[in-house]
Length: 450
Image (cartoon, rainbow, N blue to C red):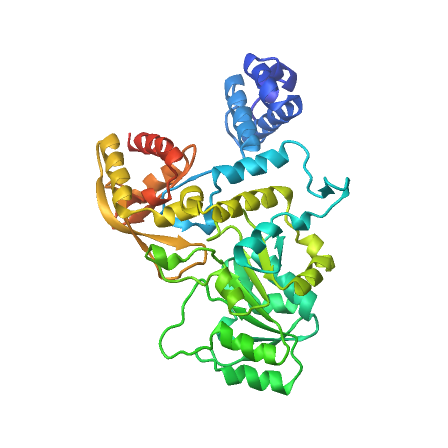
C-alpha cells in the first residue's frame, strides 16, 4: 500500500502561488472543490497501485478540472461546410442590426409588456406584428418560440377533439423526430388522412368534407424531401376554394417559409408566405430562423379572428417568444421592409453570393496558406429547405494525411472550424464563412497544418 501521508492538504495547495492566482478567475468555492477532487483522485489511483503525484501534478489536475467546469458547452463556430442554414450549427446567423436590437433590450429594461403611451401593462404579442402584417399583407400575426409550437398552438386552439384533414403525402417527419401525426395527436385534433402517398386528388378532400364534420384542412409543405414520378396533388388555391365552400378554414404549414423568391438566385422555387396568403390560406405557419434569416421563432400570419383565438389560448403563454427573439426578429423584418435583405441578412447574402466572388476568396486563402487548391464545388441551403438543390461554389481543398484527424483538430481549435472531407481532401467553402471570421479561420488552418 503506497504511503499517502506525503499528499499535501487542501489548505497547503490553496496557499500555493498557482492556486492563489486562480481565486480571482474561478472563485474560492470552485477552487477548493477542484483541489479536493484532485486529491481524492490521487488517493484512489494510489490504492490501485499507481504512484503518488507531487504537488505540481496535483495542481495540474485541479486546473484541468477548473477549466472543464467553466468551459461553455454552447460556443460559436466557423461554418466552412457549405451548408447555409445548418441545423446542427444554429441555423441562421443574425445580422449586425438584429444582434444590436437583442443587446439593447437585454442589457437593461424594456417595454416588453408595458404600454408607454398609456402608462400601464401592455402586451408582448404586438411586437413584430405590425411589421409582419405590412410585409405579408395578412390581417394579423403572432410570434411563438418555434414553428413546431406554432403548428401545435394552431391545432390545439382551433381543432381540439375535432377532425383535421391532411393528405397522406404530407404526414412528414422533420429533424429531431418531429412528426405531423404526433403533433396532431398531442393537440387533441383528430387526424383524417386523404389520398395516397403519391397521388392526392381534390375529390379526396371533397368526399371527406361532405361525409363528416371537419374543423380544419391542413397542408404541410414537404420542405425536406421531394416526391417525384407518378404523382399528383391539388394546388393550395384549389384546396382553399373547396374548403371555404364548406366554410372550413385552411392552415398552411410552410415549415421553413420565405419572403423572397429563391428561384431568382439559381434555386428551385420555395413556397413564399405571401403566395400562401394570396391563395387564400386562413393561417400560415413558418420559421424565423431558416430562410427568413432571423432568430429561432415560429410565426403565424393570417385571419385576425382566428389569430385572436390563438392569442387567448392558455398554450400561447407556454410557447411565447422572449424579448431577445422578438427584438432580433423585428430588426430582421425591417431589412425586408427596407429592401436591404440581400445586403444585411447573412443567409441571403450567402444565397445571392456570386461564384466569381467566392472564387476570389478561395484563391486568397490559398495565397495566404501557401498551399492548397481551388476546386469547383456545391453549396446547399440546408435547414430542411429545398431538398436536392445546390448552388455552384468554389472550395479551398487541402491534401493532408489523415483527413478526418485533421478535421477533428480544427474542431478543437478556438473557435472551432467545421469543414468537410471530399475525395480524400479537406475542403472549406467560403460561401458560409462570414467575412469577419476569415482571419480566425486561416489562423486555425495555419496552426493545424504545422
